[in-house]
Each structure stands twice: as structure tokens, then as C-alpha cells.
Amino acid sequence: MRNNTIGSLIWLRLMRFTTQSNQLSNEFLNRFDLTTAQFDVLMQISVYQPLTQSELAERVTVTQGGISRMLVRLEKEGYIVRKQDWKTKTISLTEKGEAVLEQAFPEQLAFQSSFFDEVLSEEEQKTLYTLMTRVHKNSQKKELPPV
Image 1 (tube, helix red, strand yellow):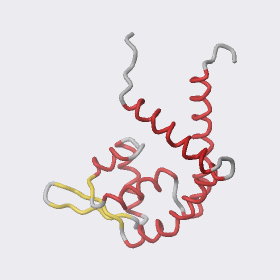
Image 2: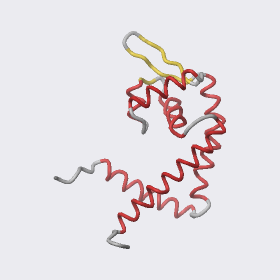
Image 3: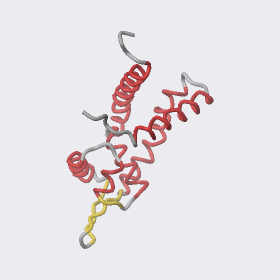
């Protein structure tokens, strides 16, 4: 274990899993002409529409600049519409956006679930979910150590 702690090994394993999962998901979602980031954005819009670009940026893992570029592409593709209501510009899905999600969501859900269903029992999945939730909540209040 060359000076690694079990915590650092868990972190490395999570990072490798996330990278691998994202690569495979990007390849999988390519059949719908979407990336994982675009899928996430469309899902967030679907759940919270109408919403502003700032509200959307708080909900996804894309930077403000990245969101702007992505929204331009999604609008060009006909998946979203942006409407100006006085000072506020809101984002909503179009029928085409809803249709692609209706097709992609169940397949992506099954694909992502398969990472766990193939190797963990239902009880193990529940335990992993509980543990990861605890770690995630702790990370949200974590502060950097002093310099």
C-alpha cells in the first residue's frame, strides 16, 4: 500500500470508477446524439422547468461558460427553448427535447444500474448508497485545512 491510507485508496477507486463510467456513458448516449453532460442538463431542465441559466448552473457539474455553449448547441438542435420574460430568461424543453429524454432516460437508467446490479446484491447496493450518502454529506461541509 506504499504510504496510502484506506481512505486514499477508496478515493482513487471512486475517481477511476467515475472516469470509466463517464466514458462508457458518453459512448452509450452517443446513440441518442448526447453526452453525459447534455443528458444531465436536459434531465435537470425536465424536472425544474422553466428555470434560469443561473438556476441550471447550480444543479449541474458544468461551468457557467460551459453551460452557455451547451445551451446554444441544445437550442440549435431543437431540444430546448429560451424565453425572455421582461428581465428574466427561462429555459424549457421542446417537444423534441422531451422525446429524446423519453427514449434515452430508461435506457441510460438501465445502463447505469447495470454497473451495480451485475456485481452487488440489493442489500449491498443499499449499504453502498447509505455509505456514499454519508460521505457526500460530509464533503459538502468540508473545509480546506489551514496553510
